Length: 300
Image 1 (cartoon, rainbow, N blue to C red):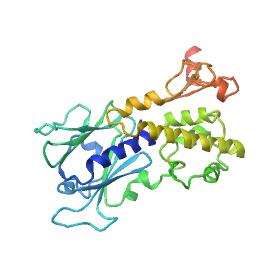
Image 2 (image 1 turned 135 degrees about the horizontal axis):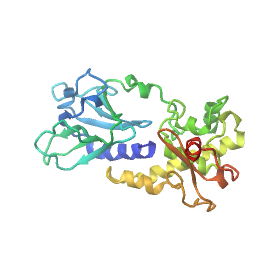
Image 3 (image 1 turned 90 degrees about the vertical axis):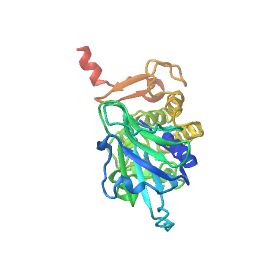
Image 4 (image 1 turned 120 degrees about the horizontal axis):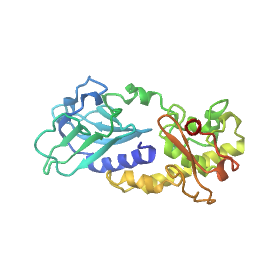
């Protein structure tokens, strides 16, 4: 799943290529991807992109008025909001085919065609059978439910140690789950929560309410350093390079069975119904493996 660093890199990539460009056509291929109907998608045709923003894991493509409408006042216009979910992606196309795409069983969900020659644009695609890619066209991003409930952005300058301490105070939940909870902190998912907790030398099963002031400080430092470094690694990569770039930059997540890059112990995994976490026993849990109930059931 694309997380804050990849979505931020996509934001930068698209801002360079879309700002000032006019939409020629919007072609929905999988109708299920559309989560709003008013205004309709064809309202975008003839409008120019004015910028690209990010809200957590949401991309926000801003568009102004049509030539007939004139320039829209600052803060007004339309927002094409995209959430890539687990298996969605944005693919930039330097030359789109002239024929419109046909609905079918392929991964293509929506195509945006830009005015001009050659015909550039981008496709939104989604692999797999669980279709969760979401597209919204709204006048106010706050009308998107997922954006309305977002917690603070962890890279915002105001997100200091005190802000993190306030969010964790009294929380009788595991710190791993809280880091992934978008209403607590926005933009962090399964992969980077593993990376942050490894950098902080903290068990993913620790209860947030039990963390000391020193541990909260270590967690805040790890959070900022891991995400900042990931954003820097992703900066300048094309949309096509970001997935591979993310995998190469991960030190713990997805590397169960490999040696820990810090202490050399074997990285372990705990499996859940639809995901898994990775950690180092020596660095994070005092040398004790965490219980993996799913694996335990298989061994009985």
